[in-house]
Image (cartoon, rainbow, N blue to C red; front, side, top):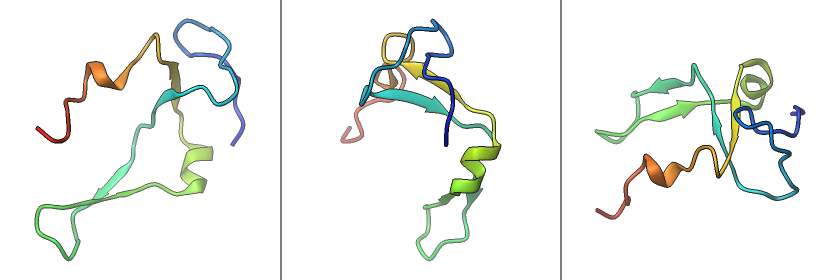
Amino acid sequence: MKRKDVCDNCKRKIEHKEKVTVIIPNVEASTKTSEEGNMHLKLSKYSLTTRAMKVYCSKCLNPKDYIGDEDA
């Protein structure tokens, strides 16, 4: 997929191989799995090219500020 190479918040240019955070709305959850308490997130290559998304540089949105340690 192609899009502008700037952060949607601060408009700073995203550099090659820089880690960014992407928010993708309308991802479908499927809880019909063989394992109780698990789900699949339905997201295809086509859905990435057709859905609106926001891209943020690590200075504007860092997942560590919102997502705790998974081992806890």
